[in-house]
Length: 180
Image 1 (tube, one colour):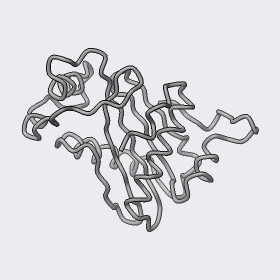
Image 2: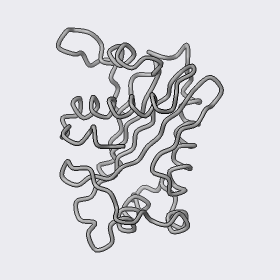
Image 3: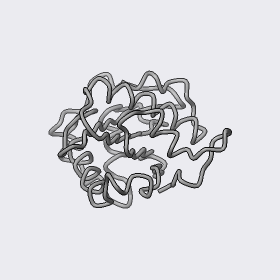
Image 4: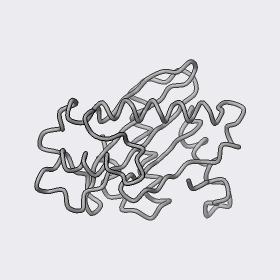
């Protein structure tokens, strides 16, 4: 997992603090490129008074379980926290939507997502894009907000955050606004 605590923006401030200022209510996020096996999240030290590592692990497990059910996005509440989790596909920097989403029963029949060989994500791509899965990657974003936040605001912030993460990782930002 990459920490943002030691990165700085051109103005000299911490990137983690930039996210807190730019996305009101956002206390933590996890971005995962499942195909490249990369993960990016702010340092937990920035939100330790609002969120524990165990809580984040529990939220990530829940998001994985919900997304494994075949949903592309989910929004739920855990106490005072509001969580927005989404998964999307891309090919060569462009958003990609399956002609017909995989049937939830077929997704549930896949091996567990946490296997070392990434069989779940490889097979998910094959289900979503039969005969055309070459070069398709799977991305996920989990946003954790504190306090009351309308679902539409959480989704809008997730869209903007994905764009910011793409800028930080050097990936193509052309389609970040097209995620949802």
